[in-house]
Image 1 (cartoon, one colour):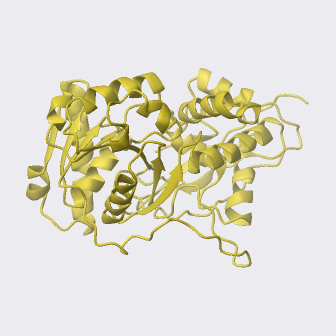
Image 2 (cartoon, one colour):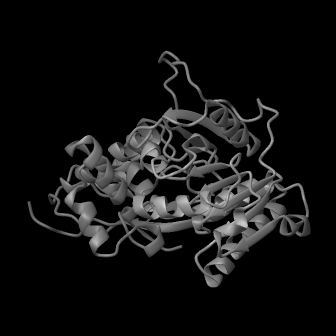
Length: 364
């Protein structure tokens, strides 16, 4: 087995949906890369790949029509008359936090985003209001820009959340950072207020152990990009009040999304399954089984996944996926041990779409 880098065939893929609520209008050209040792006879990248509908839950597979239908706790949007909380706070105004804020703004809530400093708060404001402008331009928002701006605020201190009915924490995926953030926020909230974490893998019970009111705490795992995704994973901790789970399901439906309820477990349902598939795809690429594009095509064409596991890893961020894999390996064992290729790409700064290169090269 010798290391080589074949000349990739440029493949036109749709650019992933940005912070808006419809599919992008243009495609971004990306070229598969082969940064691993692979046999000379490895398959060349596919000439094309299917376009994934941006409204599909990220990484979801279409059901097999011949398979029996299992009972589910998922509730389709539109089947509830519940409304979003009147006042919602979001801690962290990055891509995920801004997307969550945008969703609640469009649902009628007053929304406050708190960031670490004035510059970060201003950047968050631009992200949220730009997404609102895009929604208005597409006709998917029902109010005027002035009305949305009147219901939106930013701040740099958790005291800005004092009047909120719900606060969603959306800081980076680090347990110590989240515990610090959640305890600071909880100290500012009324006893009846709900507190949620957008964590994609960290134990809700582990986070709740640091809180004074664990019954008012749960996970609300939104998916990236929030406006285009139709799924929210509600994670029920051991101490979470059952009425809060019911209320949160209604809030998700008020956003036009589908809630699923899962018990607290490492990786919950979505990340545990998604990371398992992604890690195996990386191992296959590392072993020279096929090119990145062909591995992805096997899942999009063969199993009707809206996006392949390697392209999805590029969209999520290789660093994010590595962090989740390390956490799951510590909790569940070596089957989640990150492949050497993933560690090497992260160490080299190739984090996916956000840096212009991961398993693909991104020109957008």
